[in-house]
Amino acid sequence: MPACTTDFATLDMIAPDLLVVMGGPMGVYDTAGHPWIVPEIAGIGARIAAGRRTLGVCLGSQMIAAALGARVYPGHAPEVGFAPLADLDMESPLAHLADVAMLHWHGDTFDLPTGARRLASTARYANQAFAVGDHVLALQFHAEMGEDPRFETWVDEGEAMIAAAGLDSIALRRDHETFGPRAVRAGQRMLADWLDGPG
View 1: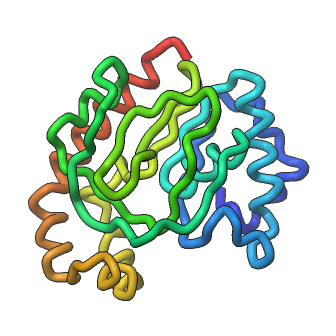
View 2 (view 1 turned 180 degrees about the horizontal axis):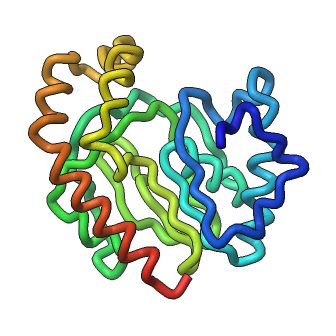
């Protein structure tokens, strides 16, 4: 359901077996223009406290971090394009992503929440993924993207961010064609592994 049209203050976010919080162009701190952010973060926090399985991607990972009391803030430079992850926790489902170029598309970052386990980093940003117990997985990168036609919209609407990251749309589209399919397959294996786990 679209976040901007959801009344999170009345929504039961604890009952579902799985909650997936996806991305968006706004930041966690953009509460004046997006008043739904505050009650959504509160609902995520209540769900995590209840031990319910929760997955966050990009903005979703930042919301999970905020719900756990961590600082979320603009990064020093956008991270855009396909690049492999570093410092992978090979005892976690992210082992499936070893040596795979994954899609990054963000300008914000966050501090690692207290009690969380860092699962991956990149040279630009230390906190690319973290887990809390077996029931929370937060991914700053996009393990779901690589063959999705929405990528074209991201490129068309993200020219300024792409340029700020030192890339151009031609190279980005070429990388999407080259690296995207493998990234999607690896992401599917990672998520299946996590979903099959004890969380």
